[in-house]
Amino acid sequence: MGSLFLIRHAQASYGQADYDRLSSRGETQAAALTGPIGGATWDQVYRGPHVRHRQTAELGGVGHATVIDELAEYPAFAMVQQFLPRLVAEDPRFAELTKSPTRELTNLAFKTVLGRWMRDEWHNEGVERVGAFAARVRAGLDRVLLDVGSGARIAVVTSAGPIGVAIGLVFGASEQHMVRTSLVVRNASITELAFRSRNFGWNPDSVSLVSFNSIHHLPAELHTEY
Image (cartoon, rainbow, N blue to C red; front, side, top):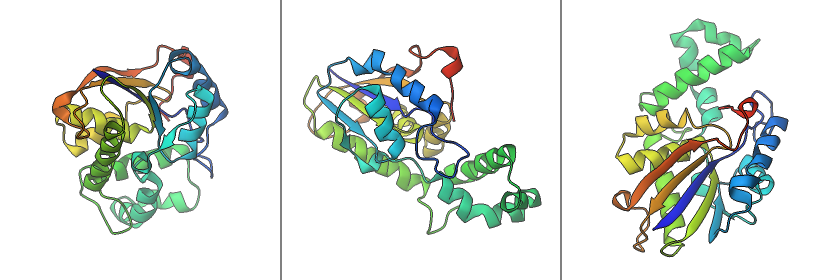
């Protein structure tokens, strides 16, 4: 049996113009990963393409990581931008997002849009659909497992969305429930999967969940989901 450790990036700069970088708290979270993963022996290390993935891998001490573009997060900001007119038409209070946005209203807008998107109720050409997102992540997982041998220990630094897809694939969940699962994945958490390598990539019948969303390495004040 091989082991695949899915590590969510540490806290990014939520609410800032440049979201895709770790916050000061995120840097502390990432450094705390050096205990459970930094000193481990890995056969392969991979990460998604975002800056927050790279920073988490570097501060977490996992060494050089091969970039897997397919393990990028779902297009959250593009969703809100593209669907804002539709959101305002449904609920006029969201018009304030273009004038004096608050954190609370922004959060509510995101959750509303995400709900429509993950149920595939809202879509347009400018936003990756939920089915395409899940298929992309599965392709990334295929690349990872095709690249390693039997019994390999693998670390993957990615985002909550791809981790939700991986868990959903293990249990045959719908795409909607894959994304719902991602909403509880905490920053700098570790999810462990066991797999049997048969040289044909990701096969749900050969992958099992060992542990989910572990944050035992983080003190309570570093527990975050955004």
